[in-house]
Image (cartoon, rainbow, N blue to C red):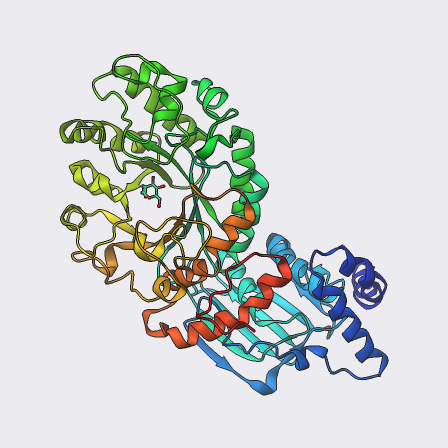
Length: 534
Ligand code: NGO
């Protein structure tokens, strides 16, 4: 009975459901694809229109896979009868695949636990030996199979299939793939301009397509405080209110409930949220809300400019540590991921001695709440940082403090500002962004090696890469997309792909071929003149 129902669904519903499904999707390509395919079916032929639209080869993947063996004779055609086969525990991952394919084709593409008989299928399966995020993809004329040891690997394989398919065929051959680095991150700055939960979710959708697996949220700064802390409610009541943010365009903050929802949403795309509360500098917004966090007890004026380095928590006051501990405890309780980012950058208003005193108390506090301390690489000044993770954001290739701590065990995430900062302008004409670390065109973002970039930081000490996007000049999702894409794809490749595959000519070609995918989803990417866009 059940089997019959599945077959019936697969055989009949696609044709009936196609028009609504295609019309409902945001992509205008869906309707066109359906019209082409319907015409092909009406002619009695099986040739998919995709063949005429120059569908991708199996090697057209960003980030480049470890090993690709294309087989031109083994193309799999997606038809109205195709099903996605996934065991119940992998159903949500199967749906990620099916959702995009439905949008492109208008077909029903049911997700079923067992594909009946000889129905063409894209299958998700378990297989040992692929590690935490690796997978194997095989495609022949009868179907495609993604095999992985862990769900994250299946999700990664799904993203690969979605890149190589035009919705009508999956190029034949096989891929074996796994990441070079465990940490591949992006960062949004909600403090300078608040970005809504929906905008953050759309960003998660887009970054996870490139196998980015961490999203760092910069939640507090001089201009605004963007996460509800129940024991210190004025933080968001005052500093998440109207007029907060650069140029006073606030308001906005995440309630803990919204934050948890974001964490859940991200987890569904195998992205871990990394929350940051910046301290002991970048705290003006906290001090506006709670003057007792200053040494003289006087509230500073709210700030809506972009200056940095002028604020500091009062290092000699116990109130400071009560505040910090409350914040870390509440954040740890709503963050299932392993990291709490405590900032630590540009504490120019904190003396060296005070900075060390502060870090000696605060870095260990993170561990007290079961989390790994993570901070900008300025924390390497403190001996207590040896057990932490430092995010390198400098513009040099040597840093004595970082090298010394690494020798003691500290790990590093690489975000050199002159390579990986997505808020740097592409060139002098870019309407958005800053340029203090230089201009970063796509090739500049791509051509460096995280594993050998910093003196005294061997690849074994590099946890991965992250592309921060600061929001001094950004307002909405279009602004975010324009600065992030296409450069985020370059950073993603540096984080995932083996150094041996690194090749600008190849990346440039694959990126050019990717353009129509962004266009069809309405992603406002920067059409860099360095790329021949398809
Ligand atoms: C710096 C600074 C931030 C700015 C950003 C702008 C770090 C770690 N601290 O990066 O406050 O927003 O540059 O590019």
